Image (tube, rainbow, N blue to C red):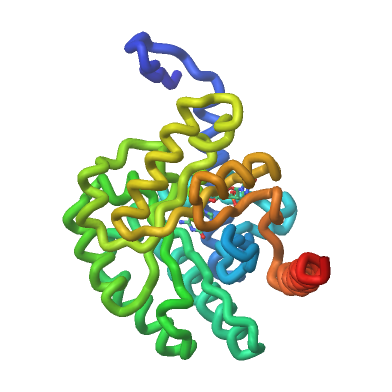
Length: 290
Ligand code: C2E
Ligand code: MG
Ligand code: MG
Ligand code: MG
């Protein structure tokens, strides 16, 4: 049978392991087919600026429209994809799709910056900058309408390499954000030399902030530090108005989360944006009239 070593070093028998392996092999086959058949879709989640409550930026989040299992979230397939070496084709697809979508919104008079998540391994691909820049040129999208979100783990795995790749992109105008900041162990000292434009504070840091003074202290300090280094600050996973208000008071620049909107398919996002703009101009008019 399959024996596994637990964290404490004792051998434990895991009766699900064999099944697991078979299941994973089936999933790899499934994922290959999905890449060939274009079964992935991108949903887009708005980020709101706390200065004027306008939406100028959205994050692209991949989903798998599985033929029998329905719409799958990235947590259900990205780990398998990464382990089986299929992340590169997905990254290329996501970049092309998101850049194409941003270009089409811009042509429609709705310029939105689109943020794309780049996996740790994709970040270390030699040809990433060239591919990104070529995709921007092909779609005729200004580089500033693309943001790449890189996790701190990716950066810390190979800081020199990451800084080299990111510098090439940032010098051409692509925006770069550190994602999930506060969830891992990014060296604060290292932030100084990273060519980035924004920090995204992880939900785990802010979620209990209203009840935990320590979390608020860390969020506040991170926000000030980011600003002094010239980065903007985005809080992610914001679920309540009370938390949004507190983040605004701390000087956070943008928020993203269910309190604003869940990630939406492109057409639904367009409808949502029209409603959002109508509502915010009404509230501005009401405020001006009163
Ligand atoms: P992330 O980049 O940190 O994205 C934020 C995740 O939080 C998304 O989950 C989003 O749907 C979810 N979220 C948004 N607002 C809220 C909220 O108010 N509360 C809570 N609890 N969650 C919220 P999702 O879409 O399941 O994506 C999970 C992760 O998968 C992403 O985390 C990102 O690391 C990865 N991912 C997603 N799309 C891609 C992609 O195209 N390429 C790569 N390499 N990774 C991706
Ligand atoms: Mg992200
Ligand atoms: Mg994140
Ligand atoms: Mg996160």
